[in-house]
Length: 439
Image (cartoon, rainbow, N blue to C red; front, top):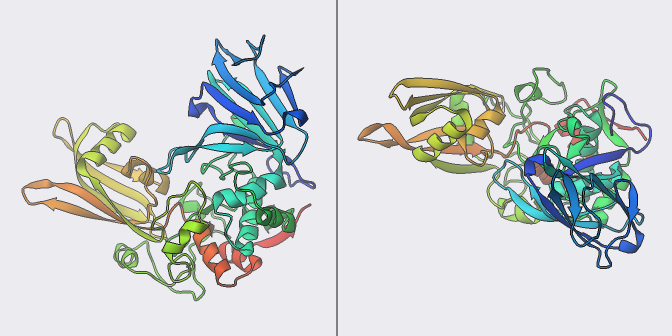
């Protein structure tokens, strides 16, 4: 595993969580592409693989059991080591989009080594592999294989920097560095691995973004909506000079989206920014997006949420016992227009008028939509009922997808499609940073 604060001098191995305890899996089916060169261990004891290379591993009485293999009960740990770097293990029904509106299950082809163990009475599956192999897979898991070379190389540098900065350590308690999903970075094994993504990792091998002798915590999102958000508005209150409110544009402009009036006008417009249809028409986006992304509008979009839907969300996620939502009032916005404080006025089951204040972009997105709102850079309109003080529904008119800080993937794609090079892309999104080869 990676060590916080240590800059590696050679390519490290990475441990990636593929199936997590929160997925609540009691069984998993595997297919080994080449069982002749795959070593199979049960509790560190080498074991023969079935001739057809298929394994079904199940939870049974606080242990693992392998279907169809004799004396394979009460196992605590399973390990498969592939000796040929071109081989893979197919894992069925891996969760993609945990907690988001694009949630689905997909098959994933994993290279190198996998380990399976029990955690909290559920299966946990890990993939251990070299960092550069992982990054080649991330580039075309996050976005599609049709993306131009300069985008793939920029995405790879940013993903490497974020990984090696190793700041968040969300899953260290489970014994791995990073998970396979949008919580960290999308990694779908070799599913989408191409010659272009391999070349992107090879050409940028060991290259990271650095600021004042530290690797940049280079976070990124799908679309900033036209202006990037500050780091401290989204996560811990510690400003990062390379992650600021900057227009995602070739020609800078001044706009203060923390002001309600300017935000309302901004959402109605289609300013000339890199992530806008001026640089990449939204009807063309589908061929460039990752496999689990939804085709649709990323720059500007509209969603209607009924009174009933909103009450259900608030009661499930905040435990309010609300019977009606009277109003949603923006109190504070970041420079990208993202909501940092939102007041919700409501009546409870005792007909009392109450209010609650939601803080942070993530929480606003979580509570306003059952499957997580695309972005919190929204203006809110009420659908009035002339016979009641209670709105029938709320309309959210939004800008961008995701938190909006750091690299805007659709903006970087727009730059790449319009002739910008790798260095121009990464320094645009992380101003003041420098490209440094660490190994």
